[in-house]
Length: 99
Image (cartoon, rainbow, N blue to C red; front, top):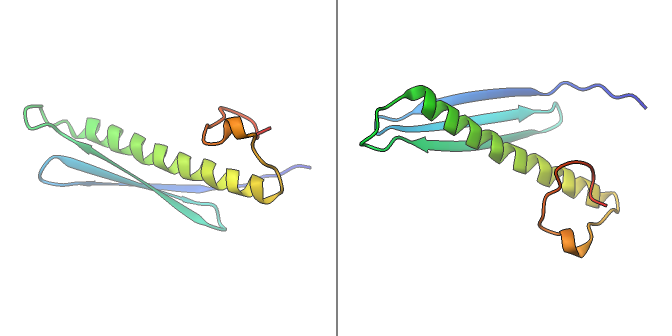
């Protein structure tokens, strides 16, 4: 069975005067939307380089989104009747469905 889908991502940055960069990434699947958030703080003794704050905040927002997406997939898999072995509960797999 073949399947094609297109999901859209929107990434926004907000920088405060205190050197805090916040990022928000929204994944729109067409059926649902997930929002990941991340922040980065510039230490007062460091040179403020906005690009670094953007990279850190974006990476953290995408990591947050990825965890939400994996959690949703695990719930959907379990909703199909599959369960994870007790030894694997709470641990993430790198690839594939839980066995």
